[in-house]
Length: 249
Image 1: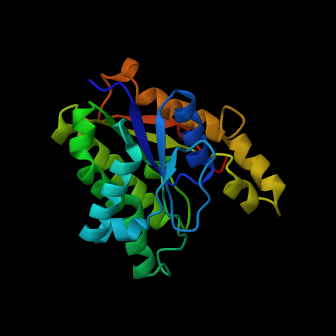
Image 2 (image 1 turned 90 degrees about the vertical axis):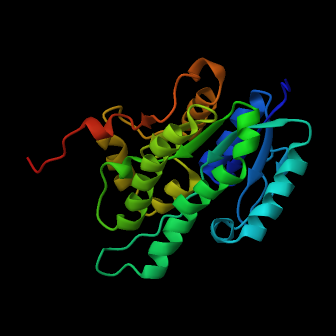
């Protein structure tokens, strides 16, 4: 059996994606990174394969070409983990969000991960591998203007359970659901209002938000042998925020 392992990470140029590349590389995996065209390849990645996830979701020829590129980049390493990390977060109230935004959210956040799982299913079965879908606390508790994003993450959680039942443990399918994570994108969004970031941190019983490294290390652990009985489950990395009752008193 081939002991050389490769991992395919979507959304690899973002904060969590870069941390995932670093964490898998540190464990000796061959890291295959993908993100949209024009993204910068993480330094710890062994190969960067640009892709448009909307096209992955909808175009058979694009998926075939992408699979061939990933296979070539993997070389003599077996594709052992698929990390569906990329996501689109389009905000808008129910009364104003457009059908185009709704459908784009579905294509990027739900359909593309599903199609990637289909495309690489045979490779992952040969390697006795793992599919890890990145969910969110928004699948269970959300806030105003997150209707499209919350819908897509709830779908990812449900898809994880159903795929695990269909696939019977090879590959295993796990959902990892973080709360807020201190990525550069999040920090940029709070740059003009640092007090709001402090309030967000304080809302978590643990007293802070997660780091990308913490999320990445948990995901790497979930894709390795000590956790081989886990499938169809969601790992909540939420700092306790889902356990806290928020009421007006």
